[in-house]
Image (cartoon, rainbow, N blue to C red; front, side, top):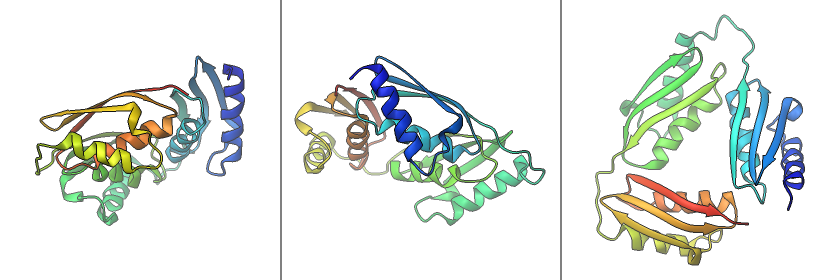
Length: 216
């Protein structure tokens, strides 16, 4: 597939997805690496555009240069956004809100703290994405599991073999002191992400180094 073909496929995917207004989004491709540029009204739409592009077959990586241009509203102050963020975190059953702090600067939300599982870290960011007035999120929450295990690598390898979306034969797993390294190659960005999510599911994982290459 040529870069021009891939560009058309990504643009069609953006036009097709109802959660994205692609009218002001431009797509360029260089050797399989997609760059998104333009303006959207919410951070949720920016994140959705990146998600859509990453799911197109042949995409190796996405540089998301889309800017969020929020319509001016005197009620969406940083203080109001901070209050809404704290409330959103406290109402999410997957988020240990008492372990997370929030800071807002001109609509950009930064969250910090420590959680035991990666899914809690991602749930915290997901709870914030759709809030009005948010232009970006920095997720500085760290994962510090309380449990430890000596066979993390074998558990992850078993999880990869169970996944219908991952070809475990092409992935090598190594682990040391809670840090997991994934190497090898996968067929798509979606498979790459699925492999990482499977690895995060093992108890005792605190960090993942992803060396998987996308080779369609």
